[in-house]
Length: 403
Ligand SMILES: [Zn+2]
Image (cartoon, rainbow, N blue to C red; front, side, top):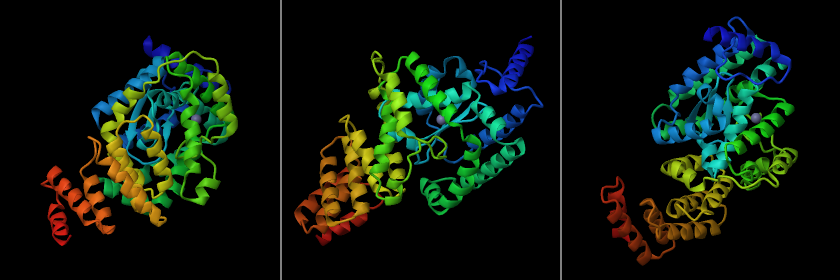
């Protein structure tokens, strides 16, 4: 009986193609329909995602993300599966079968659980409202969608195989095949995930209501979007600054003033809710260093510095954040002042309990370059006492001798 009911519910979903009928929780498409074909394709993509080298398998982080997703998804909690992918790009995606990806680039940029929850809620709304199926029926035939997804899955598979193992491996893939990824993988998938303006609006509005109903702080709804624009403005590259800001890697969620105003208007006058700032930072803290290091490899130091500045506002993780601030200035070296800024940041970092040992080494390097032998010696000695077994300990000892 349950199966029959689910099938009947799915038929209703199928019949309601032209409307904006909500998907009944637990509904699966009727076999033989175009929707079933679509699900079969994204099921394959999901299998690929599970074995992808970029997947973040930290249980604590995954439990946390699933918890937030279920808090906003409520009745759809058991329909959706959120995977965290370690990719230094702002992205969240929901497939019609409930398979969802959140990339570390997004998690790094959010500063509270509420900000994160509004993004998830937006994506859950695309799922609940069956937007993918609507878009498919409105815009293209099944063969095109199947082809686009197969190409996407194949490319993702190649990238995963080549990038398996170290973070370095993945990043060299990201760098060398960046164009390939962008042109083939991202755009083929985006042709399928491209929602209409009215669907985006619906995801914004109903997504907002869903997250507020779950108790989240309404003002957080537009905060992360506003910051997307501010980060674009902070880019080192003219082309990026002049371009549009998108809220995901697929550029299928365009962001403009009108959308921002509509979201901000909805939050006006609403009673305050749960922001979850400390909870969120505690959840991402174990990954901050890895994610910041990966972000530096994008080589847009203006954007990385913007991210670091935003994370610094809470006054936490100052050792880690100042170390990476130093790294960003050291790597950028746009002008001599960047070296001074780098030194200043390392000097701030080493005053903090959470400073990575490398902050002392880099501080020593900066002092050595600045012909400040005494300060360099102190920093190098501190580095060696923090990590006597460091792989480069011999090198630092050698440098010390030459001071
Ligand atoms: Zn969207």
